Amino acid sequence: MIPRWVVRSTFGLALVALAVSVYLTVVHFTTTIALVCSATDVINCERVTTSAQSRFLGIPVAVLGLAWSAGMVVLCSPGAWVSGRPWIRTARLALAGIGMAFVLWLLYAELLLIHAICLWCTVVHVATFALFVLVFVYGWAQEAEAPTAADRSGVGDGTGTSTHPGRTDVGSDA
Image (tube, rainbow, N blue to C red; front, side, top):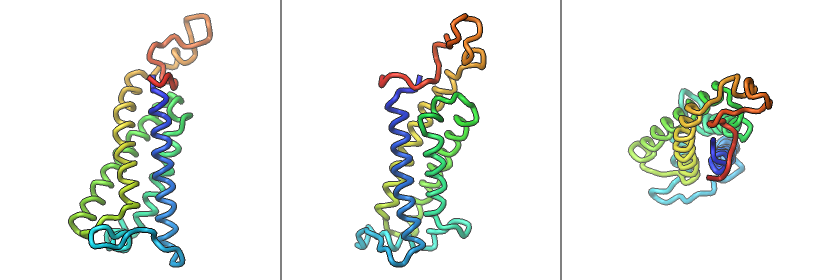
């Protein structure tokens, strides 16, 4: 059983990543909106978001972050967590892993190539790391507990409800 706090936390973290990604994408494509961030030597969002590393295969990293976080919002929604569909669980695990791998590359770029850190990007990096940890810890647990089709339909118990002890419904806050 997936604790409610995990469902709420992953959904909230995905929403935070989405909000910041929307902001960074709008700033990227709009010259009239200023990037609200310090411009000191080490903390310099503008240097990071306008660097050569701010594009991946010609696509702005902000847009990739927007697409990733939108996908995570859908896959970490309460309905997705309780769906019991294996492809949703697999997609959530895969997207969390891809996001974390990309964050590691971006951290490398910020620290060793650009020599500056973007605080807005760091918010997304922290949210991605937290999502990665929660999705992998509880995603694997959910996979081990996944009910069969018979469990979901309640076949065999005469009540029409599942008797599977590891049902993937959102449970208590435990």
